[in-house]
Length: 328
Image (tube, rainbow, N blue to C red; front, side, top):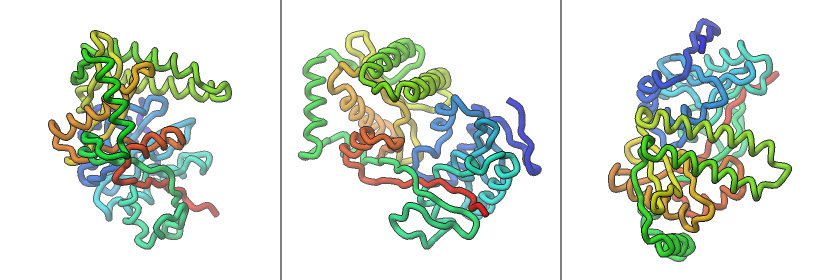
């Protein structure tokens, strides 16, 4: 991938070699949002070209799609530097882009939003940012306390406990192992193929094209995850029923106390597998890595996914925003 030169800045290819650089700036930000990690962006960046540069001592991460640049994250760094760098980043995008529709910064964390506009009205969906920008509320991240996911106490979690009990009763010989790409890679790919096949059976015909595109990106993300698992400092578990892999989950530590779930898949036909592996992953993250909270990301705007994530009773919802340059 070649270097882009725009407005006196060199935009370098976003690859594994820039992980230490991005990690250093992420530590300065120290946020709990799931998008603010190297691995989360690297794994899912399979259909776009990524570029980065350092502006005002901040890490600026751009993606190129159909010739237009946008940003999947705001500049990362100290508060005063971020505010200054944001303006330079918009100038880069404006210089490059043929259309203003893609000139935007996505996934602005609510904490960082306060750096720009201290008088934001609580619950506002869209509002002005200074005189030059417009900010729109997009999705929210769902964050849980590990102890809630491990204990599953009370009536609110009765269904989850029942599903896990069914799983352990029907599959007394199940095993849980730490994910090893060498030993488990073939089983994970087989499960992905099976999962796709089962999902297609119940897919409305008017969603087929959209779903096929999404599955291609997800399959590529899984391949990238397996290929670069150790380099990305990922943490994962698998469920084995005898020697058949029936589920896997992969995440990482966002910071000292919060971890994320990046990808999770279980066999549709194995009742309770999803609930079981989620609880077991919470145990590992809490007991082995000292994590107190788990962020499972947003619901991508899907109502069914929203219901599932709400059913686990999140302790916190982290709003994320998209920033546009005001036109006219």
